[in-house]
Length: 378
Image (cartoon, rainbow, N blue to C red; front, side, top):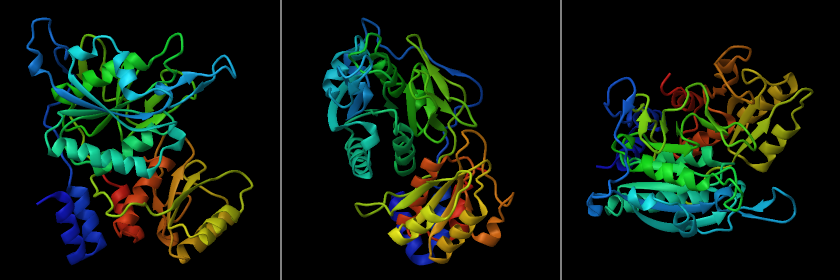
């Protein structure tokens, strides 16, 4: 019986809270042992039998990595202007790492990324692994929303096979474009045996990140991605792929059965904040609100009163933080128990929004049950 089928049956029989407990237990850990995990280069020797190379399916979605220069400025470009096949064809030596099959899922700037593309990615990846079309998947993607796509896929994909995302901070037409090297290293990681069981990975600029922690931290720098509160899970270079430790336990939830996700708004907290944005969200019919709060997820007194109105209207309220690092803890300056709020722990607002959407889509609306999932691993 599949995990998805098991959770569906349990939810029908025992309700949302048991559904959450079962979902939290549906995780996998790869027993690789502690410490630095080095391996021989994943590239093939000249005399190696080509038939033994792993099969990697490359799914292209657009982004800066597929961008071309525009004369509007010295650094102007239009994202999503090059096909995935053109990107792969421009990477020297990548054919010695794996048999590559390239498909175009979308060709958009990642600021336009949406749940419809995510659903198509999940459908294609599930099919590729179920029908043994590929041993691993690489996704080319814009960096602006890469962490959100990675987190969503990491939560709803239930495979041991590697899924690796990559992108670029400079378009392919730039003098020192970083896309070709990032694609090469993403394929190298995807083809590596120790990448199995680690969920969705993000590979850029010689660094391997886990989807749970990765976040874009600089608007223009090549080393834009960091892993908040945890650090990268490994490194990759032309010589080898190295992971720093064993795979972590991952939260797994079923993909919603419909074609949409419940609407959840992220509202940014600031000094002199009133409750207008929160009240507007209630009137608009959203099902949940994630607060990008000040400090440890705090809001002003008027905003706090508006959040109480949101809870009274049946919305789930999650407190996250606009601060880059650290945790949002329960019952510090805000009495979460009294207000029936959820603390996001280590999830930033954009990832907290996705997790809440998935839970609401699965029928989990009770604040205690939602908090149980957000506290997973802690």
